[in-house]
Figure 1 (cartoon, rainbow, N blue to C red):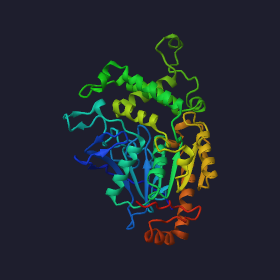
Figure 2: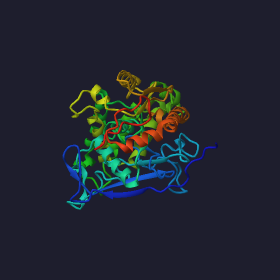
Figure 3: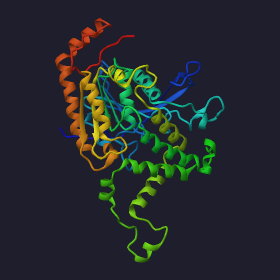
Amino acid sequence: MNSSGVGLVDTKKVTFAHPPDELVLESGSRIGPITVAYETYGELNEKGDNAILVLHALTGDAHAAGKNSPEDRKPGWWDPMVGRGRALDTDKYFIICSNVLGGCSGTTGPASMNPATGKPYGMDFPIVTIRDMVNVQKKLLDHLGVKSVVTALGGSMGGMQSFEWAVMYPEMVRSVIPIASPVQLSAQGIAYNEVQRQAIIQDPDWKEGNYYGTPGPQKGLALARMIGTITYKSDEAWNIKFGRTFGSLLKKDYYVFDSRFEVENYLHYQGKKLVRRFDANSYLYLTKAMDLYDLSRYRGDSLVEVLERIMCKILLIGIRTDFLYPPYMQKEVVKILRRLGKDASYRELNSPYGHDAFLIEFDMLTRIIKGFLSEIEKEDKDVGEKFRRDINGSKSYKNRPAGLGYCRYRGS
């Protein structure tokens, strides 16, 4: 089959949690109304069970594939993965991607209007967590009529969300694919995030978060992005792309203090690029949500006991050169899951590009994810109808055969 992209797509919005029915966050704070920006590709079938949920990373958004207008220079951030004949095949699946709670690309976040004041929330926006993001996504899926999710997948912060889907809504997801993601953020990850936040907070133009209507902390946000970009690459990647290439061919420029190597030019470019499209306060809130992320936190159980709750098929994908969330993090989780008798597998991207490889190595990802989804299709064909009859007939379905691509139904 020839593959093709999704073409022109619209970013849609839905608003819910209107007062007095605000969303109760994990912290106990209430927020509403909440607007969610999302895109869909393909068609939802009559049973509502062919959905795939794509979950974005820190500075991603709902625009995963296609173009919003013919004038767009680039398609969505995961475009090679979505479309007819691609890994996320729109002839088979209904693909959904939404901007997370706390974001700045159409979903309610710090830059949104606070109904209590008529001004942007700024730092009055409540702390949000990965679990809060997933709860908002669940409400979106309910709105769209989705009954079952074939897989929930994403890289980095998106992988954190997929882990939470497996624990929070085991009756709804048949598989998850966390890519380059831990089950809890490490001290090193927290340290990197804190330095990035300080770059923003120390910018005088941040104004305690009340910078809306002004240019805002552009230097601070650019610096935060530069720091983050360093963690997304690898020594191999830097050497392949730049080495010690200097930005000028003139010998005299080599001895000018503000002259730059090409790697320096690249970091400055990435910083300025993010400033044009991202809100600094959202960067603060989303990195904080990542810091707070721990699959076992406040669940009253150890990590092993929480992983025991995962009933769906799970594929963890690591990246050989990822030093932000190294492969050992994913491998250790797979070992625990297998020891618990779970249907867990591990694949690794043999890539020099570091953490960013999940946004670059589309051919590798396509082979891995296509193969995984074909396994689920086969399991659906072999046992799906019997399972659906059993699950519809009883809310206490306990005897799930090992290896099925469905989660145990836990009822309500």
